[in-house]
Image (cartoon, rainbow, N blue to C red):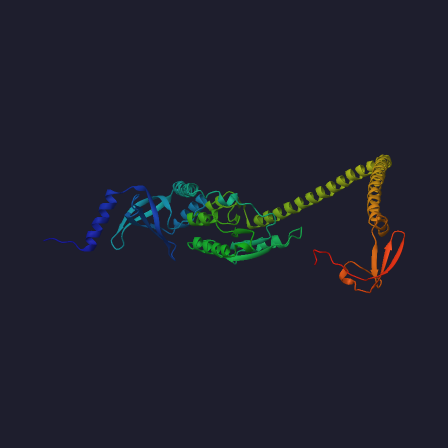
Length: 418
């Protein structure tokens, strides 16, 4: 039985592939690994996933030689604004290669950035569509910016030059406005950017009452790093954050998903500082306008009141005269009524008094005596009952025209009493 060594078999495979696949081919795939070594060569892994189950359906090793890799990477990143990293989809021109020791691989010679741009645009559009369907895309934009945004929470790298520029711009503003700035450090590039910024947002949210606005900034950096801000989780968190968010993370021509959902997007950290200063200046101008309105309004009101007062002063003498005449007439009328009522009352009381006087006169002892009555007294006391008299008492009897003195000889009681 004839046999082949492994080397012979692999050589046969290489010869067959080179013969059967002699041309270059444009291949669509996703990068699952990108690794450059010290020699300048870049080793990648191409994969293809099942669109329904997201499971792998194909995989191949790729090589970009050192004489090609720097040119290809620079061209791709400057064209797309996307780093040449794992996780992106690419369209590359390859030659099928087989090495007896290293096996099957695809040697990359060219890349078409437009394919990746289309994929990035689709991914970004998908995120925005999902946020819109969830009803959160415009939530942060709908928040009202505080009239005086002085308390500023900043998410940025601790060592970023942009953070220093931002603080200097606020501190040295020409109007002397005061801002209280607190940094919540986060990674602003790389695979951990999403997690780091989300943690910073959580820390700010825990102290939400201490701040008026959140500013997310990064200082400089490659345009290719902006794709890290095209994150659904990060965009969703920012869109629903309870404080207005200002972003200054990119360049003038670049808009990330985070920029789109933020309350306000500016180009640079310095521009973010200028925006806050502008809000403060608007507040001052509004206050000055209100002060002017208050001053002018008060001045006009006093002028109107002064005019009315002068008219009142002018009309006061005639008015007083009219009033005095009316009151004088009322006084005379009242006095007449009062005089009549007093006279009437006095007449009634006088008549009543005469009646009472007559009754008193009619009830006087003199009147009673004149009618035939008498008053009997014993020992200076009026006798009202025979029981007060004893036999032998001297009695004094007063009559209308004189006095009788007598002595009691006998006392006779009424039969009824007997």
